[in-house]
Length: 357
Image 1 (spheres, one colour):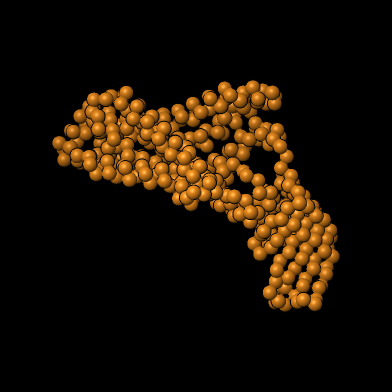
Image 2 (cartoon, helix red, strand yellow):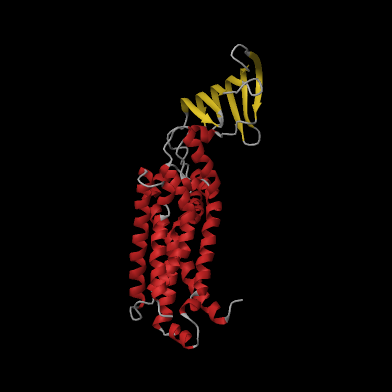
């Protein structure tokens, strides 16, 4: 149960957090509209669709701003309480600094939960935004021709793939067997159609079953439903989709599919781990910001804005730097995503341990 003081502290934190968490996306949207409005008007996109597309973009742009919003809210809340001696009054009443800022810790945890929620709700909104802005219509085609794909236990040779329509043509699928109980199979089909509910339906082809080196049983078919081949068209295409278009699980499956195609997935691995690391950073940034806000009692709003902006720039630079390091494979991609969070966590623990309680 929250006491009156806890509700007061948490209320001040959430008020500043809400303004900051929504303010940063609005600034990003204003900049993007200024840069791309002419392009959208040339596409003759209705103004209502443009406005709705940017409304759908708010959760995605809010995601990266969550740690920044927690930092601003923590620094301004604790700084204000320190400046007006409310922290000192709490200490005189027997409430330690750690106990005093515990509601802010709760607020940072709520922000972390919001980050995980945004991970799940953002991908369909981003896809809807791209549809409204007609991005797929005006970008280069994604048809892929004459390629091989390594599925689970199978090798696919595909003449042509259209991921937008979910169709393939001139397909060969080979599964290496181990003997009569698990024979080798070789399937040749002229075309195929993907269905999310049923999988791949292949048409007009032959299935060869080879249990040993001298036997080849051949079956012609007009239509064959392959329920074990679950690789979707976009995965077969091995096209570098934006990580924001996919949830945590979907991005994991997509990375696996790209690895089977021999693609470099370091960048996607970093982005996938950032989907987990950035929400956790909301709690870590609290450990950093709370003691930092008590270091100057007379700095006022100027001090709070200055230190928050400085830390924000450092954090964003570190994220971009680690993205580059992880993409190049200089350190494991999954580890690269956690470096900014770990660094701020260590500094935060040291600063918090030095605060006079």
